[in-house]
Image (tube, rainbow, N blue to C red):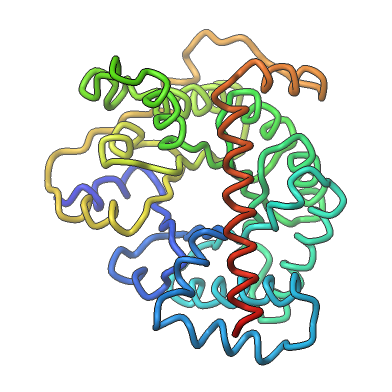
Amino acid sequence: MMQLHALKQYTTVVADTGDFKQLAQFQPQDATTNPSLILKAVQKPEYAPLLKDTVAQYRGQPLDEVVDRLLVRFGCEILATIPGRVSTEVDARLSFDESATFTRAERIIELYQAAGVPTDRVLIKIAATWEGIRAAERLERRGIHCNLTLLFSFCQAVACGQAKVQLISPFVGRIYDWYKAKAGNAWDDAAMAGAQDPGVQSVRRIFEHYKHFGITTEVMGASFRNVGQITALAGCDLLTISPDLLAQLAANDAPLPRALDAQAAKALTLEPVQYDEAAFRLALNQDAMATEKLAEGIRAFIADAEKLETLMQAA
């Protein structure tokens, strides 16, 4: 049995790409996008006309609105290929502005509704800053479901659970990258693989906490560097996987056992945790990896959003 098929027995498989022409071969349930993935897609010849057409159709409108229309255009194309949900990201430059994030998310949903897409097929991606989590909490009360991204720490996950957001995306590969870089020559790839991978361990801790305390927020592992990280999280609610790694899973017929078990998590002895704003900010500050990777991730998404805007202005 192909590992990809086996994984689908335990976990909802999500494609992490803006390249919607690749989706059909892997038959994912959902798909996720971000500014970097959309930028990568529109630079391919097969997607360049989509960008030019969107710019031509809405020329003269504010640039931020035209960008949102392009993101929604990609989202609609993706939804024509998959049965589930697509995640569309709010501008990362709004990551520390609760009100602006809320307003931008509402506009994205309105654009999807105008295109005939039901609200329950869209997840609004928002960086898991304190302000982003608060905006998501408000959006969820409005019936607009959110995917909290750039999540690297337990405190971010707990705060998202408290806010009753629909889904979180803890970043496995970027956590792995940080610890590997910090260890330098002392890093042992074999010893830190699979269940010992720090990114895998982070997701496991979050998953077990949510399942133990009956928190309904979905856990979707993201940002994978290798197939071993994916197979070590088989049983997670969802995993969002790049086309390259999906292809590797599809080509591998090795056995794939369940690694995470919600029922087993309920039997664990765990202490309840809550965060107010001050406690959240302190906990995040004390986690050097999470602090650095969150800031780095926001900067990278902003840089790619600006590159996308430059391409659109030149179209």
